[in-house]
Image (cartoon, helix red, strand yellow):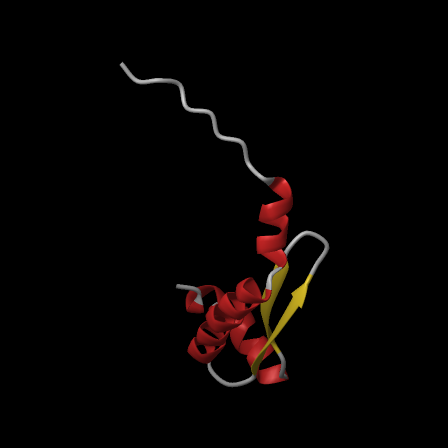
Length: 79
């Protein structure tokens, strides 16, 4: 039969991974793909928060805000 397997998560290591420059690079790559898929007028920002790195894409111009409101462009660009 199988023996019991114990797994202990290293919380400090996971925290370091979530804030690492490698994670920021991955997030920037994904955010760029979504921003390019949304079209013109959208911008992106990447920052390191309290517990992890974050990336956001947002409508930067009036036309993009109107387009996103009417067509849900950002939601559709996420793939």
